[in-house]
Image (cartoon, rainbow, N blue to C red):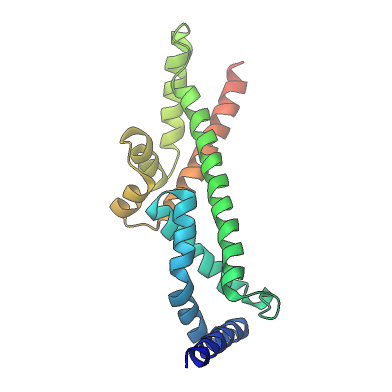
Length: 190
């Protein structure tokens, strides 16, 4: 009896993998129900943040569905394939986090100039305020919340009713734009 149940379970997993590869929408729902706890758990252990783990889990399944034509059930189990995608999405998350941190540090370096050069500090603060005013909405509000109100990305997303990924993208692009503005301004001042 147990052997028959195990055989049926293996057949169901194989059917799920075949349906997923064939693009059957019902298979996507079943794959999510079956594998999302595993994907979420891997992401949470790697990232240590529930919001980021949820974001990565969503990205994994969206990416898997969009690239289902590359999945070959004869080469790998669906769960193993999803683990590979999860690892790449976690790595992408850490790379984005690192890039945002470097951008933040570059922006902060302009906000906290050497106290021995007070005139440059005032000029830099005015230039940053001016550059920040050049940002549109909601970028300006998001940056103020993140850096002056010290709110987390998830809190900002909830407060503005925006997806977490959108908030992160706005911060990344805004910091890049501010950094480029400051580089141009620094060159003009030299």
